[in-house]
Length: 338
Image 1: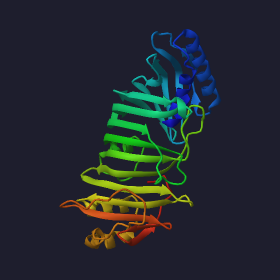
Image 2: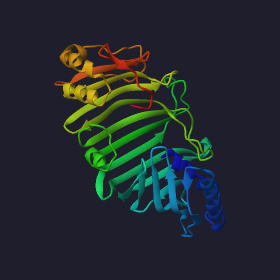
Image 3: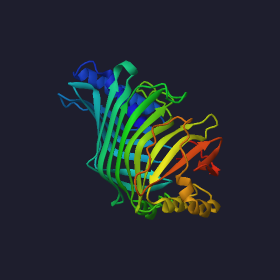
């Protein structure tokens, strides 16, 4: 989504007042940016002319990403003269989504998007808020309840060396219907239905997003003091920190808190996150794994003890390997794949 906000946010930089001349200038600047960016297309970009609000409208707007293509009949970027650095993205309740060459009718219900820019930080997105009551593909609900809030923070001494900016994220995903996606040809693997997510994350990036730069930065690390994940009847809470190592592999330490440890190990094996030959060994050794200590020499948040009925399973990623409870179980994945 940063790619879209970088494109859409440039019109805010043109705000010198709320008169029609400023609005026309903003629409021309945005039209040029859309034309110059191979990831975006629009048949026209026009000033809205709806005082007292200030905005632009893009007709036949398309956003292309390596993973998918989004197309809407129109998109509007609207600002109020009382908050000239805050833009609201307005979209229709229908569009088109293309994944792996397959087209789907996209439906949005209760969608809302807002971005606030920081004028003293090269117009970096300072606050982003995305919400949707429901997202449908070909009339079938695939997402129910989505709320993502991103707030720019300040880098601390504990940030990864490659980090140049940090965002505090609050994520609430009510339900992702994996079976429905599979029926539509989008296979996320053997994940039980539905998938849920709730919690807070700290995201480190190797640059500062800005409407003055068309290149979106990459995430180089993340940390959570508590992210709850669910898949069907399974549930776990994740605490820890991972970063991108110098070799591009994932490094760090996580702790999994759960009452469903055996089911989670079975599911991890089904998803090829751990080797099949390790599944039985890990299952029989769960008691010992849960007694493993957290490595105090690895940067990260505080790791609380497990509550009654739970197990705490420490996972360490270092030197190209994954260690579960001190036992090497496989190769560390490239950063970004988890």
